[in-house]
Length: 238
Image (cartoon, rainbow, N blue to C red; front, side, top):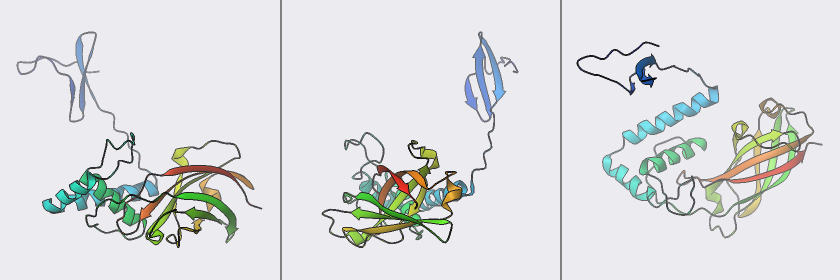
């Protein structure tokens, strides 16, 4: 690597500037260009990245007073990252971007209005049945319970799913996201999901599958989402 030559302005260098990093070895200063790793991403990842960039751009275009309103509501919202002891909260930017993503996931991408955080109802998802439809798609039904929820119809279930060979553990990088076909019709009801071309998503030879799930709720009035829960089970396709 090229050696850094001291001069009248700088006798030594360290750290990075631009695309150059200075480092020391055996008391001598050298420099090198930073490697540039280009990963184009999958089409889905690129779509998600574009969505996130639109959310960030929308935040920057908000009036400052509106941003302050988001900050106030964010201070009362629980963080989706540990520790889950009430000691942490979201910034206004976090809450805004989360709501933006939530509405986009519902197929209603728009700039959300500030809304106070409301605690989500407890949700339980229990596997019901599965069947192949149209020769390639997987239809899954679950019993969704929202005990003591005054208005279950405002919530939509999001399922993050992975199919594996029976007995195999989960790999979070292979979870795929699916939205329930409709909002929860009541506090104890069936919800359905369609997984298009499911055999090409996971290279598993059926008819038995180990199913790993994460599930959460989207509030269709605010775009907010709750902390996910996990479940795993065996599924047989006749």
